[in-house]
Structures are given as structure tokens and as C-alpha cells.
View (spheres, rainbow, N blue to C red):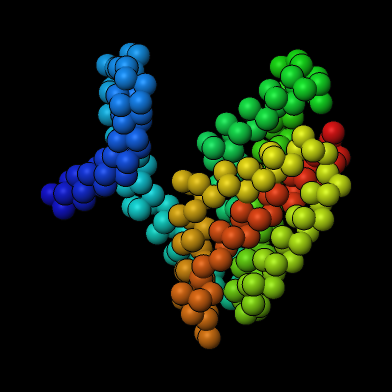
Length: 244
């Protein structure tokens, strides 16, 4: 019974989150464009599916992935195995990013645009290869970022110096990278910090900081997402310099 109540609350939360989007779209359709949207019945059915999908997805994250990420980080830290903790952090960053639906969509769109611009071949194989290369590059960058963030927590390094240094590198690479890859690189930083990556990476940082003596989960447990959004920009800019 308690699980059903929690599921219902999660569903209401998903519906509440969609209300602003529905209000904005409805306002412009009715009062600005003064027309009813095409295929209104299909749109309403799609909204129901979105609410159900978000509900089950978020509920599943809270029940399964979030506790797993936090408990694994705590167990590895208590065991004192720095090697396996580093391997786990890299694998977690790589695995969650390569599975990120937003990254798949952006990589596919970038491949189409690159083919239309003549930067790569227009064949399906060339576009698929470009998109997969972009996805793997971003996934590797996030894996390295989470690894670096975990080492920062272990060592107690200040986060602001590392973030400032990263953005200095981004500005330097932007000045020499092909113009056609700059926008893709900047967008890559945003799509990696989405529905799959954020909960697990946050759980890793908080779980790790909570069991290490002298670390504050509030001060040291967060910040991994900043690394995860910064590093893809650097890696994709370099990827564009190599491939294009």
C-alpha cells in the first residue's frame, strides 16, 4: 500500500512538472496563434504517456539506481580499495553517459548537420561512425571527469581552482577548434548531465564524502556534475580538431 501511495505521489509530481510547459504551449496556441493544435487527441495521449514514463523512470531511479550508487561508493570507501573505487567511478561515468538518450539524439543530429555541411561523408555509415565517435568521446570525457572528481574528494582539493582551469582550457581550445564543432561541444556539456547521469553521479559523490573522515557531504559530495558538464566540451573540441 505504501509503495502505491509513493507511486501516486510521484505521478502527481510528474504532472506538476509538466504543467508549466502545457500552460506556455497552450497560451501561444490559443491566444497568440489563435488556433487549435493539429492532432490534439494524439498530443493528449502523448502527454499521458510522458507523465507515466517520467513517473516510472523517476520512481525506478529512487528505488534502484540511486541507492545502488550510494551504497557501492560507501562500501568501496570502507574497504579502502582506491583502485576499485577509481575503476568504478570511471565506469559509472562512461556507462551512464553512453546510455544517455539526450546524447544519442544530439550526436545523431550533429552527424546529419555535419554531412549536410560536407564536413563528413553523406553515407549512413559515415554519419553513424561520426555519431558513435562523438558519443564515445563524450562518454570517455565524463568517465575521466568523475574519476578526477572522486580523487578530488579523496584528496580534499578545492573545486574552484579546478573548474576555473577547465574553463580556461575550454576558451583556449575554442580559439583554435573548427567553428563547426564549437556549438556541438558546448551542447555536449549540457546533454551529459541529464536524467540517467545526474542521480547516479550525485549518489556516488554524496556516498563517498559521507564515509571519508574529514569530508562534509554538503561541501565535498557535490561538484561531480560540474566536472561532468565541463569535460565533454574539452574532449569534443579536441575531437573536432582531429576528425574535421
